[in-house]
Every structure is written in C-alpha cells, then in structure tokens.
Image (cartoon, rainbow, N blue to C red; front, side, top):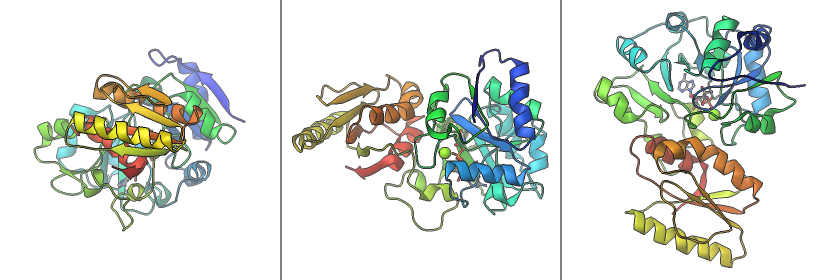
Length: 344
Ligand code: TXA
Ligand code: MG
C-alpha cells in the first residue's frame, strides 16, 4: 500500500511532512521531490531500510546512494575528512544540486556507500525535501525514485508508475524545477573531479575552484565496462522502452541533415519514429514530435518526462539531435549518451 499526499512545494504543510518523517524514522520508504528529480528516501543510518531501497528499485548493490542533509554540520558527522575547498562550495552551492564525495566516517553503513570508503552528500534546496530531512532528524539516503534503468522521475506520477505498491508514501510536490540530477563532485582528489555532470555546471564550479576535471566517462560514447570510480557509471541508464538514437555533428545544420535522413530511413522500414527537438524545432516529419524548449534549462526540465511520453505514444525509436556541451548542455548530453543504443 502506498499513500500519496499532495504538498505545496512553496509552502509545505509541516503537519503532513511530519507524517512522512515518521515513516522514515520507522524504517519505511518515502518518495519526495527535490529540485532535481524525485528521490526515494530512507533513514541513511538504518541498514535494513536502505537495503529496501535497492530491492524496490531493483538496483545493483554496487551502486552507492547519495545522503541528503538539511544542516551544514551534519556533514562533519558523515565525513571523516573535510578538505578546505568543501566550505567554499557549501557556501556557494548549498542548498542546491551539488553532491560532494568525501572520505566517509564510521557511522555511514556500508550498504549506503556500496562498500566504498567515500560518501556522497548533498543538501537539497526543495522546501519539501528540506523539511522532510529536518523533521525526520536523520540524514536521508535517496537515489532517484525510478526503477533501475528507467528515466529519473520528475513528477509524482512518474514515481507512481514505477513504484506504486512497493513503497510506503509518495509526496506529490509537482514537477521538479531542474529536471536532471545533481552534479557529483569528487573532493578526495586534487583537482576535484566531476563524476556526473548535473544541475551545477562545470563552468560554475571552475569559477569558484579553478581547474575541475571531468571523469573520462562523462563524455564517453561507449558503455563503460571496466571497474570505474562511481559504480553507477557502468550501467545503461535513463532508458525508455524505445531505442534512443543520438545524432551528433559538426554544426546544427549537419545534425539536422543527419536526423532528417535517419528519420526518413526508419519510417520507410515501417518503424514508428519519435523525434525529440532540443533548443531548436527542426522542420522534419516524424510520427511523434516533442519540443523540449528554447534553452538548455527548459530542455533539462523536460528531458526525462519526454522519454516517458515517447513510450506512452508507443514509438519504436526515438531520434534526437545533440546540443552543445556548455552549461547544462553537458549534463543533457551525458544523459542522452547513456540512454542511447546508438550514436551517429
Ligand atoms: O539529484 C540527485 O542527485 C538525485 C536526488 C534524489 O537527490 N539523486 C540521484 O541519486 O540521482 P542516484 O542514486 O540516482 O545517483 C547517484 C549517483 C550514482 O551515479 C552513484 O554512483 C553516485 O551518485 N555516487 C553515490 N555515492 C558515491 C560515492 N561514494 N562515490 C562516487 N559516486 C557515488
Ligand atoms: Mg538514478
């Protein structure tokens, strides 16, 4: 049985959030909105509660989970070492879509970090998320609230589709603002390294820190099968049922030409083809066309829901033209590469 409650994201009712917090404290699972995507939360210090997250998501046990906090000083509790740069970042980007990887303390159960000696910590800015952590009065371990391998949920309805009946509660706080997950930044290396691009951009981080490296997998086209630093990197992710074909190119025109040719070829083969238009609407005929918006921010907000929508419209294939890897474009292209079965 899953209880679904509606909460105003601008002015959350503390009473309702208390009911949710009680479930967390008792070892249950609550899906809640953050500014990035919906998370599936459990008491991070309760091993059996965290284990349930892996079960209901069908998530491999070697993929560690982010711990969400509501106060700066909880960080010292979770991390064994907090390098000086951390404070600069916390001051500038918390609460917000930045996750920091630090050496873990003993109180963090191994199941949370998948046995790694580091822990990933973030302070969400969404008011519901913030109040939930505050009221639960424990750090909350939360991956995205989707079934493993599916696009991350940006509405409570997406969570319902994937997890209804398997978790105790879903807090419906409307559509998430950013739409792609947080940036995961490794602070155990120098210079710091982005393990997953997200809501805080590479450019923003470099303006505060100077050089920030990108993990090779961030831009990699091929699936990574060797042992990697962030185990989540090696699996196929964000995938709708339909096969995603990503088209990259030298210029906008080059990409548009290639997309037009592909869409035409697939339709001649009798396939039902969906076309995702990012930033610019292409004048190409397809069976289903979705325009994601004029800016990378709008595209990010609508990206995952558009993949789910394509499945609802029963397309066989989704063709999408790439965009520039600047600002949020880096995170968008990272997710599209991971979702795709073929890159042209
Ligand atoms: O925006 C977000 O980050 C959302 C919301 C709910 O906060 N959460 C999220 O969690 O996207 P998840 O589990 O879907 O992705 C977490 C990523 C994975 O790629 C995982 O491998 C990485 O963070 N990660 C977690 N702990 C890590 C660690 N100790 N070292 C390296 N990577 C870690
Ligand atoms: Mg996820």
